[in-house]
Length: 148
Image (cartoon, rainbow, N blue to C red; front, side):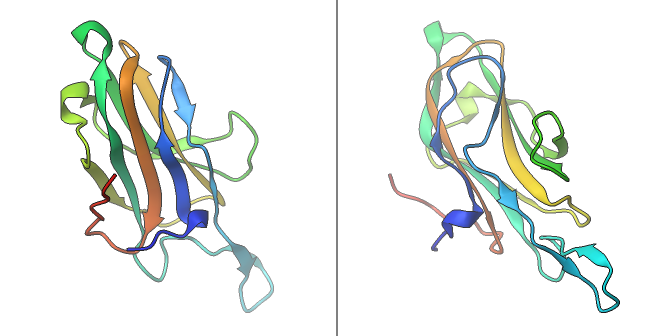
């Protein structure tokens, strides 16, 4: 499966502190006008199913064997202003032991999304000593088994 770089949020993105990290890139959902000339959001999830994929690119490990957690969120905003993004999808609390090479989180996009989408990664408890994530949008819910 080919992934369009405009649909790619993160490419081997690593996290080095306990904080919420925004994805390297964001997706700008096209806007347009309806047949009456009224501005209308052309929702990424409307008219065809789209999915957010997050896949472990490099297996995660925590410092000194301490428990580290990661939460992956898809966020939306009507503008690119910092602080204006809010969660529209969120993973459960992912433990470091469950973040092995190739593991995936795939969820269908809801309808009614704002223009801008990004992925946020929240690292809690302890920082990771290793680990990286790839994240992208796709119309294929089956995922892809990348080889690294």
